[in-house]
Length: 635
Image (cartoon, rainbow, N blue to C red; front, side, top):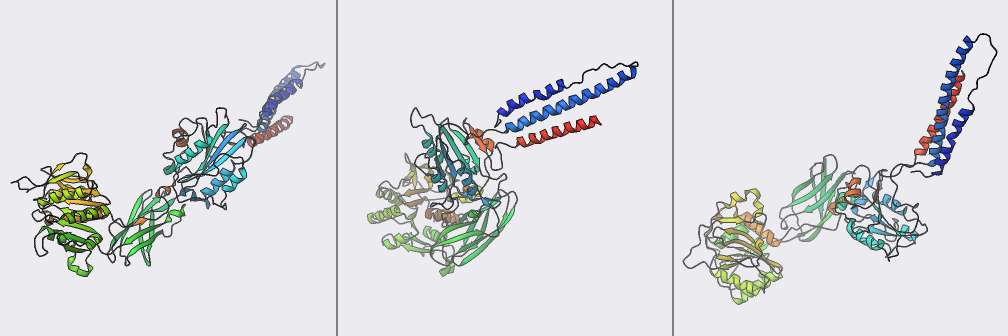
C-alpha cells in the first residue's frame, strides 16, 4: 500500500532518463591518420572495456536512485490497513466500547490501562462529515453515553475524562462483554431499508482472558467492521491477589476458629507472601509460599472476643504488583454466642445408656469444661414445650418423643416454615405417625423422598448396614476417600420401614440400608430443614464409633449453613489474572467469519509508515556510489 501512488508513475517515467542519457552520450569512433595501428588498437580496446563497465555501473546507480526516490515519495505502508479510521470515505455509524472492568486498573510503567484506553478511544471521536458516533462504557452493565449515535463529539470525549462528572475509571466489576455487544448491536442496526451507512465498532480493552473467553460477535450486524484496540502490555503483568477470606463453621465468641485466606499468585515466579488480617482491634499475620500461577490457602486459628456482626480486612503486606485493588479484601463475620440445642425427649437425663444420652454427648463432647463448653443442651419434655426456647434454639432434636400432640405438631411445622433446623431420630413406631402428621401440617412445604412406615408386625429391624450413600453430600462427604472404611463396621437396629414416593427429590436421600429402607434423609421445609436419622441410637453401634461425633457435627453445620465469613463488595476474583487473549483467538475463533482488525499497544498489527526513510537513505547511497564510480574511473 502507498499513500501517494502518483509518485510511482512519475518514477516510472523518470527511469527512462538515465537510459536515454546513457545512449546519447556513448563515445563514437573517430578516424585518425596513423601509420602504425597495432598499439593504438590495443589501447582503444582496453579503454572501451573500461568505459563499458563504468557506464553500466553508473546507469545502474542512477536508475536505482530514481526508483528509490519514487518509492520514498509514494510513502509505502506495511501491514494490514485499519478497518476504522478517519480516512474512510462516506457516511458511517461508529460505536466505541470502552472496557471499565477492574483489570483495566492494572499499571504498566506507572500508567493504568484505563488511561491509555481513554486516549485511544478519544482518537476515534473526531468530527468528519457523515460520521455519527456513540460510546459504551462497559463493565458489569453496558452504559451508553447517549441513547443513540450522535455528532456531539465534544460531549463524547468529555465523558471519557477522568475528571468528568461521572469519572471514567476502572470499576470493581467483571466485564459482561456480551451485554456490551447487545447494546452496540441496537445502535448499529439499520434504521430502514435505505440505511446503507458503514457500520463500525471499535473495542478498547485489555482483552483479559477471563472476560473475553466467552465473547461472541454474533449479535452484531454481519457488515460491521470491527477494530480491536488492545491496551494490554506486551508481557503479562505480574500480580498477586487476595481471592477469598473465610471462616468455615459457626463463629462463637471466645472459641477458636480457623481463618482461611486464599492468595492467587499470577506471576512467573514463586513468592513468599504475608497477609495481615484485622477484625476490630485484633490483628493476625499469615505467611506462606505461593507457587507461580497457583492459589494457596493460608490458615491460622483465631479467637474473636465480641458478639455481633463485625467487619474485617485482609491486606497483602510488602507486595509490589500490577493491580493494587486486589491486594486487600473486606469481609464480614457474625460472632454468635455458643449454640443452644433443644433435645425434645421423654427419656430422662439419668437414663444411661440411651439414645438421648448418646445424642447429648455428641452435641456436647466437651461438657466437662462446663462454662467453657462449646454449646448448651436443653432437655425438654414433649408434653411441656416452651415456645420461646424452641424458637431461639439453633437446632431442635427429637428423639423418643412419643406421640406428639396436635398443638406440638403445629408448633414444629411453624418453626420449620420460619427457618428452624431439626433432627428427628426415629427410634419408635409412633415416629412414623409423627412424621406423616408433620408433613401434612406443613401444607406441602415438607416433601421427603420417602414415606416412613412402622415395621411389619413381628419384624425386628437389626443388623442393618449402609448399602448406598451419597458420597458428594454432607455430612458424609467429610470423610472423603475414607468413607467406605468408616461405614463398613456400622450396624444399626430399630427405626422405621420406608417406601419411595413418586416425584420426590432423590438427592434428599443421603443413605440407604441393605433392606432398601432409608437410613438418612435431609429435606427442606419452608425456610427450615429437617434431617431424619432412621435408627435407634441406643441399640445401634454408631454412637460407640469415632464416626458419630463428626457425622453429627457436619450434619448440624449443614443445617445451620453457618459459613460465617462473607465477602463484602470488592474486586471480583476473575479480574485478578491479567493474561490477555492472543490476537489469533480474537481474530479467528471469536470473530465468527467477520472482518476483525487487531492493533496492540506494543505495535502488533499496526501499519508501518517508516519505509520512506529507508528508501530515501538508499537513494542517497546510490548517488554517492555514482560519484565514487566517476572519481574512481577518472583516476
